[in-house]
Image 1 (cartoon, rainbow, N blue to C red):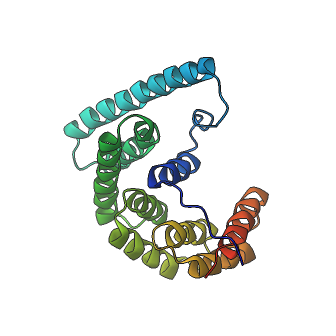
Image 2 (image 1 turned 60 degrees about the vertical axis):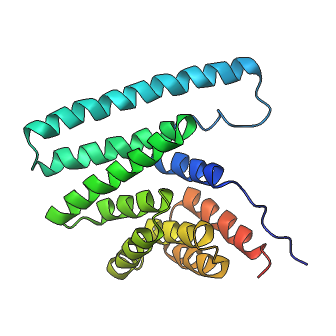
Length: 203
């Protein structure tokens, strides 16, 4: 019998996804086996990064107040909230959810003024992380229709199917499709690892 995937807490899954998404340097904080010194240093680094990203949100919010229709300012603020979420997930779940909701709000404002699939993908991932399955699914489907060979879109829609929908077969299908179009070695490794994980789960 194929072994079933171990149930992992939603917070841990979201944390890993968020870290890989934003490129945070704090991936080592939660690794097992770290001693107290490492934990303390990691916490201090996390709080310092949090303060920096919070300040960026404050400054960009003030800039947007002066030019509320500035699309680039809206996008910058959305990205700031999106980035800040990678620290608040470690500190305060309520604030983490607020950061994602704010990112979603500003990405939607940007998309209302210009068509941009990179922004649309950020919106889809933010909705996925905030557990807004309807918005995430709708946005991913729109992206797939617009860019059916986009490896990042296929990869993330597979992640959504795997973690939110628990539809492992469909997740594997999207990853297999992404593998056909992929030319990046790092992404190839990610895709192959996730495909193997999906195949290892009992139907």
